Amino acid sequence: MKRTVNFILMGVVAVLIATFCLYRYVAKPYEGAAQWVYIPAGINEDGVRDVINSQLGPDMGSRVYRLWSMQGGTPSGSHGAYRIEPGTPAWRIARNIAKRMQTPVEITFSSVRTIDDMVGRITPNIEISSEQLRAAIDSILPARGYEIKEEQLAAFTPNTHQVYWDVSAERVVNMLLDDTKRFWNEQRQQKAEKLGLTPVQVVTLASIVEEETNKMDERPVVARLYLNRLDRGERLQSDPTVKYALGDPTLQRITDVSIDSPYNTYKYSGLPPGPLRIVESTTIDQVLNAAPHDYLFMCARSDGSGYHDFTASYKEHQRNARRYQAKLDSLGIK
Image 1 (tube, helix red, strand yellow):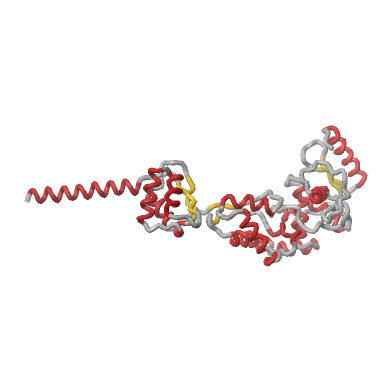
Image 2: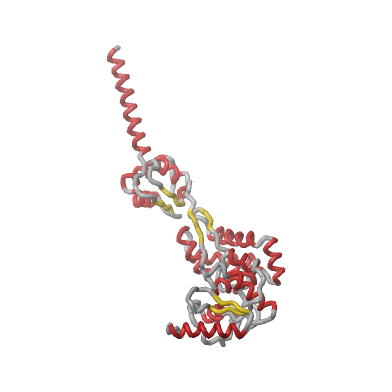
């Protein structure tokens, strides 16, 4: 009897030891720095193992890979991105990957001039390439009402989204276009109509405003100045439009405004055929809500502050311009 009891006790101890060892094995926490594990499309099981080992280290990596296999993990069923935080137990890491419980990634863009610039901001955080996203944009924009190439910059309004790393290019494009559609609600459309402008024209004017000044408190003043000129049928005579026509937004001094381009508002009346850049939503609202004033002219201040002098008088504008030109001369800017 005593021998039987001892045998049972030994069995219980063995089970407890085995259970404890198993617990230690599956519950071991990840102790490294936070990491992303990316399981790309088309990878095989050896590839999954190599990815996990390279990101988590050989000890934790091999542990997670075994547990991933035990939980029925497959390469196609694990396709995605997973954020691994310090302290996460091995079994949970393996479960998340095996069950494709992805961690959302963030895509965002702002302060970009071109669609290619926007694409370059978005694609580093998702699986699709710049070429794939650009191809989807070119395919989808005409079907969503942006057939005219010059107007396509107006299709996008900067925003931030959480998506999964393996999101499709088509999903990204439609999500961005939906942002713009939601932004142009009935109230904003009515404000645009009151100004005598279409939404694309409002965005075009907002792009000129952004290129004219980075001072947020000045932007409504600049917007109203150009609205005043449009209302009077006067040419906008905006330097940023000439820079756009010349293909160089970094020019500090415009000495020749004779270029024959529909974007040259010194040569052609009205707004250019499309935006000069992708515009922030706040600037669009500053155009739509610009307070009335009688200014018709603006010139950069000679004090280097980045602000402008505004006036309704052409003679006063000439004096402001001479001061600014003299400042450029003193700095050797040609």
